[in-house]
Length: 562
Ligand code: ADP
Ligand code: MG
Image 1 (cartoon, rainbow, N blue to C red):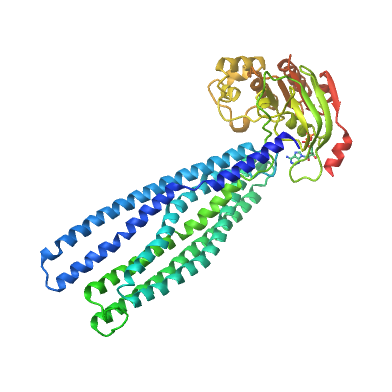
Image 2 (spheres, rainbow, N blue to C red):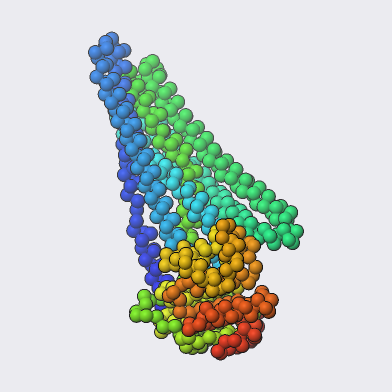
């Protein structure tokens, strides 16, 4: 097993431990503060009933002045605690989201770019950018509401029971029905939310993919078909969204029903007790106005946290679904090899030691027991038909994918993080970013100055293009550049990096006419002067310009294609 595979395993284990160990404590504090705020209603209700009792017994203003003041002060305290609790919860939820996002993005960055089992870019963008936001209401509102719903009713029950066991019994019976129904509904809601999020992600992925291929779609007259598919997907998303909403409304309705019934029954009991019709249920024979009122005031407060919980119930479903998809981004597939930190200056030779590589999800190896040593400064062509594994070999040399067995060494060290910084990759279709031509060369690398970029453009014989695009940006995906110009730009990008020791080029002349191909070949040779060059190609003319040609076994290509 290669060290890259071991690295990946250790990384995974470390991630797992981190996930289990961390519990957001900010959220717990926020929930405690909010619960305390809710509990303040109990002394308020007590004072209110005492004050009304005194008035009913003929007391004047002086009898109720103190209770009134304390009620007002408790009210102020309660709102302060509520505000503070809300703010704390929101902050804790946001930092939790940031953490999870960072973890997902870091995990994505560790994935090998050749792994085609990765989620589509549009889907990832939708999950990380948009769907992940659903975690905030879930953590900030649902979590505190859950603590409140489990603590506050119990305390209220403990206050009601010493006054009237029958009122406590009514509340006690109404209460468990609510969580049971909510759990049943919540279970459906979670499934519906997951489906809805999947539909959102799918739609985003589809849209981004088709927008990128808009030119192809137009050219092949597939606009209508694509639009129909898009409309169908949007309809599907609409249905799923409505399903989530339906369940959310249903759960609120169920809860409101039970809460209303519970309060009504307590009110009927208190009312008839005060009228003297009911003489049981209280410990002292009957309820007086003060204790009756106290029980009556507490009954709605008993259901209040449960109602709050139901209002945020669908936050839980969508939040947990969002957490699931966000965390799923951290699941590992094929990882980028890390290699070891470079010890001393890196050599420029490339060595494949019985390297075997298989793409994730594929049954056959793309490369099997491949041996090759390319000395520093050597220029080598990999010649072979399409599918013979040329690009795969370049990806292994570039340290973009780990070998399944065997190893690839750059300058005697395993290909990985440190060798990647010394390698320039020139692909078949270099990506041109929307923006100025100079920025397309510097790519924001701090060690590359504008002067260096200009010199590299000149050396790559793009001087004319540079003056034409001096004041205007290149179009998205290189609109306005010919294939040859795009390749020259890629060569200029590689040339500005003073640390570069090895050039890997993947079929640089594949789509070019022979004159341009010859031109690019010259530029490539100029770039690779004194450096190691490995070119994948099926163009014998390009191969002939290299110092050595490695013929890839056509048998291998046929096996891989089957
Ligand atoms: P070449 O560059 O010589 O045309 P490749 O290295 O691209 O060949 O491909 C070698 C084999 O691996 C082919 O059978 C191809 O279908 C398969 N392959 C290439 N890229 C991937 C990928 N990202 N996922 C799965 N299989 C792949
Ligand atoms: Mg290829």
